[in-house]
Image 1 (spheres, helix red, strand yellow):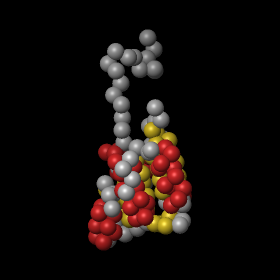
Image 2 (cartoon, helix red, strand yellow; image 1 turned 90 degrees about the horizontal axis):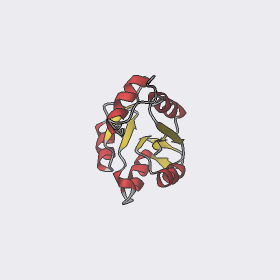
Image 3 (cartoon, one colour; image 1 turned 45 degrees about the vertical axis):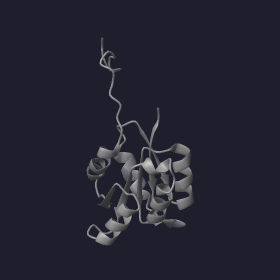
Length: 137
């Protein structure tokens, strides 16, 4: 089963940061800089997590939040909204009202981003009867 994270941002470095943050996990990171592409990919892939910021081509992250929130199947996807300003309560209130699970300032390190993503990622427990692939036995 493939797991997906959708990063919707005009800023390409955000997608690269997300890819680096989850590189050791079994997640595919798909990046969309355009609002319509982000909506298409959300419908097509049903991602496990969406990360967006304020700036998209053809719209905003708020537009994406609104569109995903209005869709019965997609409104269950957790969304992390990245704000340009860490202390802007208006952005925080607006994003959470539209359905963002968390609003964070733009992360500057892979580790910081990983810690923000971690609570929203899904992990399947391995069966206790199954040996790990790396076992020398």
